[in-house]
Length: 510
Ligand code: GLU
Image 1: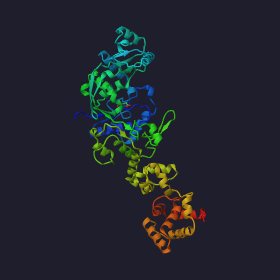
Image 2 (image 1 turned 135 degrees about the vertical axis):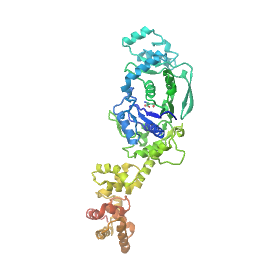
Image 3 (image 1 turned 90 degrees about the vertical axis):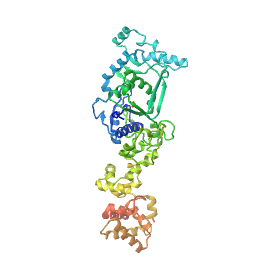
Image 4 (image 1 turned 135 degrees about the horizontal axis):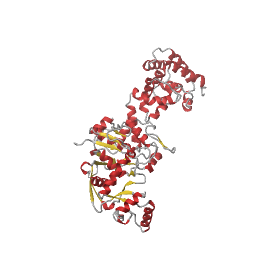
């Protein structure tokens, strides 16, 4: 590849970024990094009807959370600024005019009402109305009106659009890096609107081509839903005379529902209890949607999971750091077939990542959770608590339930466990154990365990009986790690305090 690799992620701020969009951004990023190129973030906000406040900020924050770094773009600046299409509006009109002057496009003055009428008439006749070569000559366009009439209409403020004059019966030959050679006959295509006087803005097609050209984009990597637009985009490059430098295209496979049929939607997530967005989202009207971050996923686990939805490394390897993804990514290994989303696999990845983390790495995840429960702990202690329990975690949000007893004494006791343990000789046995513990100087897990085991043996108690009763006192429930992990962590004073508390507060149940 001798051309500098420049790719762009070009979302429209119409709502929260779907995980399919995150995957598109990720593949662009991996491709850019793999080839020492640039990753550009362009915001395509020319559809004012669908603009949603907050969506752009959401997109930027999502990419940051995912570790997808932007080299140029909205929020980052760069040599082709501005990167927000609504701030580039004066650029596009001249290009629309250029196409009209060269005969590749024309002005159309039909009002929405007139078009609705034509649509209704076609439907009544059992057809679908298409604005194309068959009808364009009969409509109110610059193809039929005189130059003077056109100028007069524009001058008096009639609304107009510029439409692309789709050639009749031509086979457009295209190449896609994932799908190979594709052909399409233009007679199946209509005359797409390129520019609208009503809001003085281009449509997606014009703005996208003009900006990809001006921003010197070398590869367009985007979702499969844009494949039907590719013939138009090829023709636009030709019409502008930019074929020589037109980017190469790669259309990514769809993300499919867990059932494997149809596109993954928010509804699937709602139904089956998983997020389809990276971050929690609140719409301007107050609707919310859950996100991977808030649901307790580690960003790299989420990215790792997404990376394999549509790409495979050709090996058995499943766990990839971002750098490993960069080193192994290639478009050749992106599949044409849709990739089925598996919520359980997302959880599996997360559990793997949590398990591989050190106490130090876990601390920033558990600290906010402890704080939210009013617990102040050093990073060292917080991280250590999470580390002890990490094997049992699937999500970051599991942390409180799994570690709270390290920081707070039980305020109530699990009924089932209490019924089983808090009877017979057990309360008295626990009292004796407290006395024994008071005499231990070195409260390390190993030493405490050795002393207590020797005592159990000498007394003839069963290990299970002692440990379960101690668990009731220290944890309050039948969960948690080995008891000596708990005693070491909470320390001598707290251990004895918790034993004294159950002796004082819980009446023997028999
Ligand atoms: N703005 C388009 C979108 O939201 C971008 C498509 C493209 O990458 O060309 O998907």
